[in-house]
Length: 334
Image (cartoon, rainbow, N blue to C red):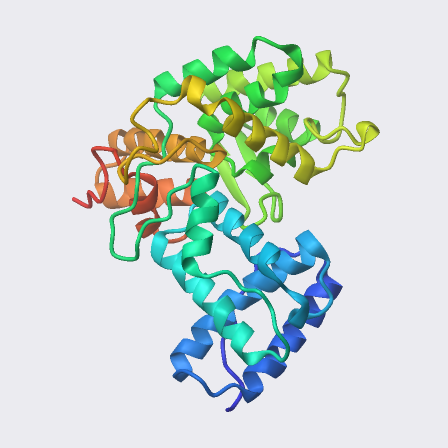
């Protein structure tokens, strides 16, 4: 087979040397692969470059043939966090299983049912390929309950701030933990929050105009940070306590999972309509609110959808069909 053109692009990789080594190994695999049609192989290679970025950044894995079930399960967590559609998740998993068949040696690669069960145990519902996406956005009442619980103890201030900030700025959780004091001050000065390239693992740089509510939340975030001894640098990652961005992200996600039953609506997680609440669901809440505001602001729905998709770091407005499940504006195009 000849060399595949237009390989998948990865926005930002922290461990570039390891990533380059893994993608070189991937290139050799596809140079000799002949299973599947050309378009299928091309699509799979794009998916697998993203998988290589995950292996490089999260595990520093040196050899593709050494990936195993834990790496696939972890990648599944990342797909949920990124808000991938069901079809996209299946496609990524199919690509990984294809890679397994091309590599020498034996690996335990989980079946689709294994991954679905793994996610279900964490409160995530992975739909069958043909079913409708589920509602993931937090309701205002659920946010209020969670905030009331988070403010009860001072050591939960990072969870409290995540819930406050994210509903007005729509960060992925990685963007939240990578925010610096200097960045917030710049946003308050300019009236726009500049999300840097690489601030969010799978996100593009973008500008988020500050609403009055967002400005108030950022001002409060700086005050809370100062009260906790943070004067510069990352706001919620304390390297003096050996914290990392990954550990802080996990601690927030674990808190939401541990106390979820105390603040989420009782009908969540009972069927295929409303998923259990996750950190990424706050971003869905932001997206729905922003789309509603943009519908009032713009003359037509197309411009409103385009502005909203750009605000959350996407180029295609079709992504809003994933974020707006449960909203009156779901799939509305005119």
